[in-house]
Length: 67
Image 1 (tube, one colour):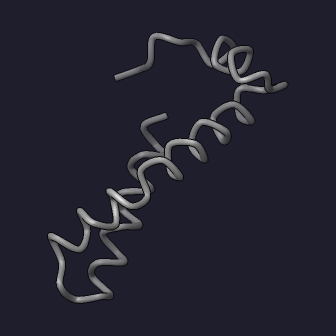
Image 2 (cartoon, helix red, strand yellow; image 1 turned 180 degrees about the vertical axis):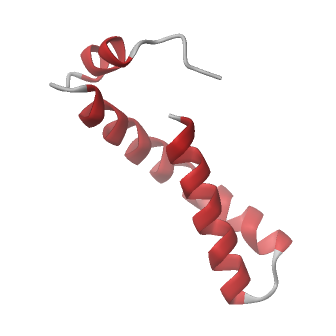
């Protein structure tokens, strides 16, 4: 599913020169805002620390690719 905002509109809204910079800024904001919740979610699903870290990386990657 694609966002209703075009990459150019996203860049303009973020005050960035390129859509890539806007995407990076959006990802950073979302990651910081939700880091604790995602860590809690991963901990609730995985007791093993290595599997928990893998799950957390999957969450971050999925968020990145969804932008």
